[in-house]
Length: 120
Image (cartoon, rainbow, N blue to C red):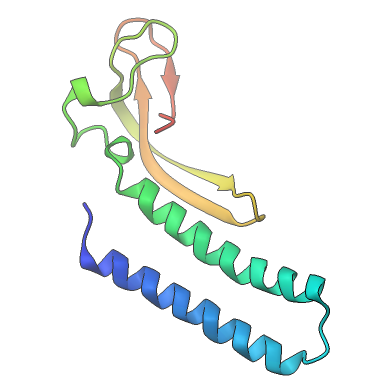
């Protein structure tokens, strides 16, 4: 689940954002505060998206087969515990316009048949 490789990846992403921002600033010495903010948000938005994607993928909901049913998500319609049906990839947009891709269990409710991509 969680391991040091993930933390190292995040450290590398942060280092790249810092280096990229420093290089951008050298190339744009007369940038306005708004321009600096946009450049910074772009770099930090990328770091944020990758961290969000990674953190979501290590959650129990990413693979319902690995977690006990009682710990898994429940059906919003009837409250029964959802079961893994297949794998789905879903693309979502973050607040800063970055795209994250989540590959996780697509679930079905054994009681009422509701099928969904678990939210947690």
